Amino acid sequence: MDTLFVKDYDEMSKKGFEVFREIVETKENPVVSINTGGTTRGFYKLLVEAVNDGLDISNTTIFVLDEYIGPKDGVYTVYTYMKENFLDLVDVQPKEVHFIDGSTDDPEAEIERYKKLLDENPRDFQLLGLGTNGHIGANEPGTPFDAEMFLAQHTDSTIQSTMREYGISREEAPTAMITLGFKEILEAEKIVLMISGEHKAEATKALIEGEVTEDNPASILQKYDNATVIIDEEAASMLKEA
Ligand code: PGA
Image (cartoon, rainbow, N blue to C red; front, top):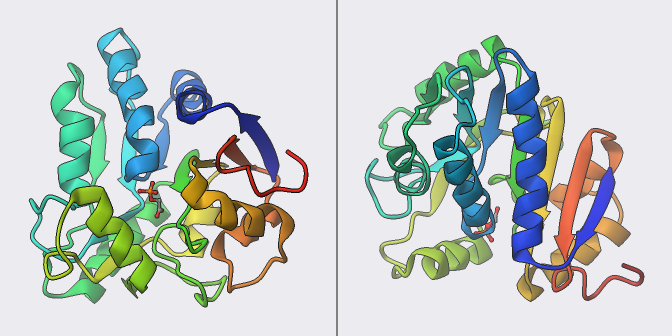
């Protein structure tokens, strides 16, 4: 695992986007899996600017990291986020965008469908954010490191983050999501984890200085040479040396 220390949110977004851009520009038919959330908004801004400025994504296939269980067009869904922050804003569409259907009444069948697509489309790139409890995707603390795509129940801290991010009440907030497991996340040829803000400082410290343990999901990245963690100054503020 490489670590890249940057000044702030904007620089983190730029560095993360540079990795993505190089893959999209150099691979013939790039396949990327990208996440959503507060951390990644700056990345999408850069992506939209780049596409409208000529970056060709017409050969790029996109997967999503996860999707909340709930109506497809809910304010908090990955589908809504991707439309509002990316797909509705670009002049050229990607070759394909594969969403997870979180409105399904048969999550197991949906997981099987998506897993098959993932198997058929090895990813060149996986983008990640870090939960305040160390989660990646919805692989919450305690999830086995060999977990395959599954229906995850949210921990309280994740529910709180969703409420904060989308300004919704606890009753409105989803409590479960379908997520790629560690297995599918770690299969990508290049993995980038972006971290910004003081509220992530503790989780960052555990990731960089802690043990590799299922109690700290992101720690598995320590074992992956193809993973880069991009950390801004606030997120790095509790590290011994940064
Ligand atoms: P955030 O979420 O980018 O909204 O902080 C990251 C995550 O919980 O995975």
